Structure formats: C-alpha cells, structure tokens
Amino acid sequence: MADTLYDLVDQLTGGGPSGKKLRRQFHDSPESVTEDLVPGARKALYTMDQSQASAGGQISSYVLTEFQAEGRGDEHPAWEAWFVAWRFPIDEFVPQGKLPPECRYEGQAYPNPQPLVYDITPRAVSFAAGGPVEVTVVGQGFVSGRTRLELRQQGTNTQLGVRAEFSGIEGSFRCGHLYAKVALPAGPVNAAQVYDIRILITTGTDQLGTPVELGPLPVRKEVGQTIVFTINP
Image (cartoon, rainbow, N blue to C red; front, side, top):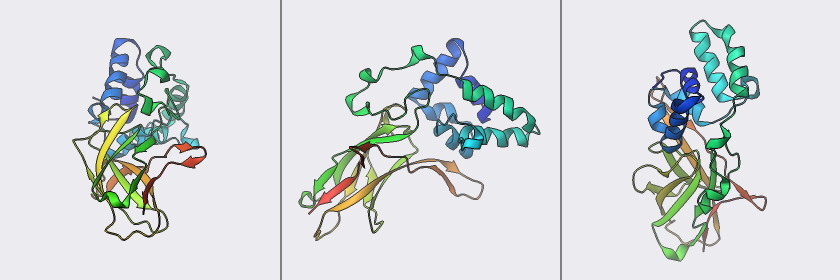
C-alpha cells in the first residue's frame, strides 16, 4: 500500500476494478488500507474532508506538506483542484434505507462520510443498576483497534471508568459499533448526572511519543439537542 497520502488518495479514487476494490476494502477495514501511512497522514485521511487546504481541509493540507517535503509544492494547486472535484461513483453508494436502522443518521453521506457519533444505547441508566453497565456506541468513521470511548460529566469534566469489550470495532467505516463496560459512580448520586460522549481515534504516536488523535468526533443532534449519556438518581 502507499506510504504517502497523495499516492493512497490516488489509488482510492482510481477507476476500474482496482479502485472499486480498494474503496470497498477501506469501507470494510480502513486500517488495512492505511497501515503504511505515518500517524499524521492517517489522521488526515480519517477526517474524510474533501475541502481545500485554505478552508481547513486536513487531507489537502497534509498532502501539501508531503509535496513541499519533496520540493514539489508548486504541484499542489493542480492536485488540490483535482481532489476537490473528484466524486464518489454513485453506483457504489449504499442507499440509506438499506443501512441498519441504527445507522440511518448519516449526517454527511458519501462521497464525504465524515465521522459522526450516531447514538449510545442505553442513553440513560439508573444509579440503582449498580455496574458496570454495558453500552453500545454507533457511528460513522470508527476504526477497529484505534477507537476509544470517554464519558465526561458536564460541569465537572469527571470521567467514568470505561473498559472496551471485544476486540476493536464491529461493522464498517459507515456503520461501526463500539461496545464497552461503564463503571457507575460509587454514590450517593443526589441529582441526574449528564455525560458527554467522546469518541477519539488514535492514529499512532509522533516522534516524541505523543499520541496523534482525531476527535472527539461530533455527536448527532436530536430535536436540536446533542445526544448524551445520563445517570439518574
């Protein structure tokens, strides 16, 4: 697989059977396609942002650094114009109605399936339930082996203990399921506690050993309100 982001993008957008096969492979197992990229390039690709660098597009911005490192910075405008204009082949779309019911909140569908947390189940639990409680988080843009869940209390930023269940993510890049066991507070709980859902994608470590992460991913809104996890007293 390609070790530069611009080469991998060229392969992913290729015509014919090879391009279609690689796009399907990315859909089913994105990590298998990006294994040769450095963490920064992998992070940029997982944003699925087809915007221009001047508009904050991380893919185009990262490719610019690759071109500049090779002394080819003057080639970037032409590459970017091609990249921004490329469109995902319409015959490869999966109709929204054929997705699992829990994944029909696409937010941004192909050709730019930008990462988004769809929902958490259950959304609310009783303190009396004890713990740990198993939760399922569903969304788009999850990557097996690189995705983790944090639940941070609004107002205090206190985190609940979260332990991943099983290995990695089940499903696909467009409809991923993360399973975790969540430890409830020791108590007593005198009022409802509301926790923000934070999904982060760790794409590796930099040269200083610092984790390179994408996120927290945006969370879907329902009736104008962002979905949260609540513990009721």
